[in-house]
Image (cartoon, rainbow, N blue to C red; front, side, top):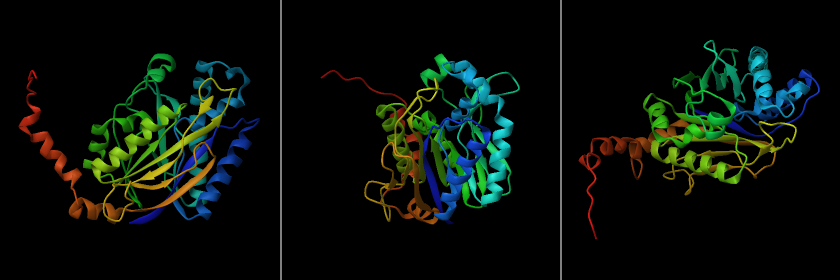
Length: 296
């Protein structure tokens, strides 16, 4: 299976109407399709730009979260329509969603060309989500079966935890998507280096999308730094550093690259090293049962 993925360096804009948001997404997806993309991925918390539609949210984080969460059905309907219109898979920007139990989660949705969609909630909260935003952790991992292969989603901080990626890949994920939102270069590099590490460990592709630019009106996504990237294991036909594509930092637009699942499958069988297979050797190793202490 081979296809082109487009990963967004997505600016946070300010809208005076819902129609402005619709036009923005339609134009972005039209550009992705013209460049041959079969999958377009938007970043974490990109949907927070919709808070600009309600002036009561300015400077009020809680109001911003509640307002965008209230738009979830409308956001989902729009993305379903756009996926059908453009005949493409879309990872929509993540957004706060209020669950039936009252908790708010950070949710990414994957839309298929048929308009059907599924979702993945963020599993591990950063300090600001946990301590300031009041966002709750998700309680399941999902592998999405698509015509492009099996896809797993690890939202931003989640990709920094190897066991989450390992579990998705053991369940058959061919590609991991890491939508992110970081307000410092420290944050961006933590996520990027984690993406590259997960690509190495699991001998899979990992793609990262990012928010970019400043939105001083927003208490949630006011500063955004980073570059989108597509990463693979540094072996075989892949680049020496495993960086298949990387964007110009902080510049809005798409970066695109081809995903060839057969290339990673060959490496899992015949690579110079077999990281994915050999993980089980470390799990069974007696070395992990006890660590000796020695005075020198």
